[in-house]
Image 1 (cartoon, rainbow, N blue to C red):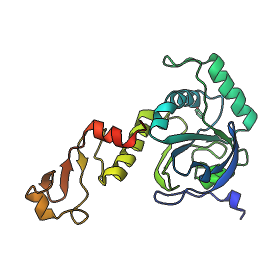
Image 2 (cartoon, rainbow, N blue to C red; image 1 turned 90 degrees about the horizontal axis):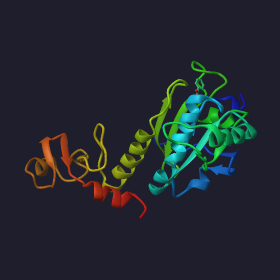
Image 3 (cartoon, rainbow, N blue to C red; image 1 turned 90 degrees about the vertical axis):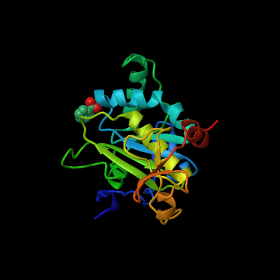
Image 4 (tube, protein in one colour; image 1 turned 135 degrees about the horizontal axis):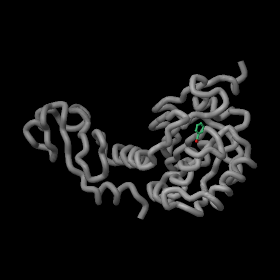
Length: 235
Ligand code: BEZ
């Protein structure tokens, strides 16, 4: 079977599959061109569709926020370049959504009419559609390693605040060697990794480390919102 006909599902912890592509911002060599930055590679089902339009307007409006967290955005659908250009122009000229208008999409949108990239990234999920990419999200770190994968069906628009939270949580986990609990946001307590990786369970239970231990397996510590954001956001 030809490589382009194989559907693969890249997994967390693996190197992001490589590809070269044409985009609305010129050619890209992925992920090499993004080395040193976080990048969110995401797919949408089709240009000139309403849910995708609302998503692009939201993501484009948040682009600077993601850039401050050293994260670039790259979109993809199996439409062609001229469709992408016409759609993005229409969004800017005509669409108003939740107070957003005149929205310019400045991040690259990949044309993938052969579905080569979409198939490499498991974006074509035949149970949902043979001809459209599902709403996939790959969060890739500055070394080109996939750190989070999220798939949504065609009908469900993504929550971009959640994607931003995911990015900050991954960066916080890396910077402070911690994990982040349910619904974590900067300023909330973080989870200290299981005993053995730092300190001992006994030290923890005796309160020798600056953390609160409820039992040997559940220890938290405080990191202020200011410290988190000072560490991970660009000044
Ligand atoms: C949309 O973006 O509105 C959409 C695209 C494909 C299928 C269903 C909805």
